[in-house]
Length: 376
Image (cartoon, rainbow, N blue to C red; front, side, top):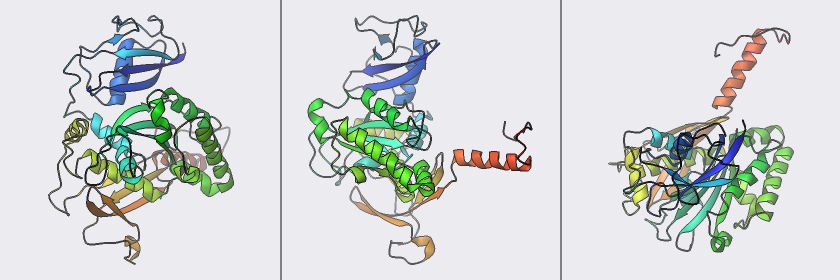
C-alpha cells in the first residue's frame, strides 16, 4: 500500500498536453490509470496510442502497477503522444467541468489576466496563483504572450498542483501549499521568477473563519505570507494585497469572467490556438448583443456565488438595494456592469453540516444513540 507523488510531463511545445502535472496515486494503481489522471487534469481526450516512457525513452507497459514499474515518490515520467496530438472532444463534458474549476474564485485563468497582470511583461510572462479553498488549496501556473488583445492578455494554463487535502487554516494547510508550490518549482524559468507575480486568494472558508476569529485568521495569512515570501523567489511586492482573503463579490466576478473567457464571448481569440480550442469545446460563440449574455452560478464548499449582467443600464451608483452589488469591469475593450453576490454558508459542505446538525437535534442530542440520516 501507500501513496506516492508522480510527475507526468510532456515536452512537445505545440502539444495540447504540453506541460507537467503532479499526481498522487496509490502504488497499487496502474500506469494506465496514471495516464487517465493526467488526461483528466489536462482536460484532454485520451487516445489509445498514448504511452509513457522512462528516462531511457523506453515505453512502459501500462498494465503494470506503479509499484511493479519501480516508481517511487518524486519520480518523473514522460508522455509520448503521436502527432497530431490529442484531439479535444467537442462533445466532452471535461471542458464544462473545467469552466466550473476555473470559476472557483477570483483566481481563475481569465481573472488573473484581466484583474492582476498589468503593465509591461517579458515575452512568455508567467503568473502563480494559489486558490485557497474551503477544503483544499490548488496551485496554478499560467503563461501568456506580452502582446494584448484589446488591452488584456490571452492566457494558457501551464501546470497545476492539486496535492492539498486540507484548508489553509488547518494545521497542515500552509505546509501543503508550500509542498504543492515546490513541486512546480521547475515550471517557471529561474530568470523569470523575480518577475513572476504570485497571488494567494483565500475564499469562503477563510471568510467564515475570519468572521468567527479575525485574529486567528490574520495569523494564518501572516504565516502564509512568511512562507511564500521567504522560501520562494516569486514577486510579491505587496504581501497583504497579494496574499489575502478575497471578498464574495470578487469570487463571484472571477467565476463570471471565467465563464465568459471559456465561452470566448469577450471576442474571437483565434490568434491563440489553445484558447480557440478551449472555447469551441465549451460551445463558444460571440454574443450577438448586450442582452445576449451568460451568467454564472458557482457552488463551492462554503458559499455559492452568482454573477450576471442585468438587463438595463445599471451602474454602481444606483441606490436601489438590489443594484448595490453592481461591479464595473473593463475587459477586452468593453465595459460590463456585473451584478455579483456571494451567499456565505450556502456551499455544499455547509449544506451537509446543516443537515447533520438537524438530524442530531431531531435525535435529541443523544450521544449514545445510533442516528440515521436521510442522505446515506
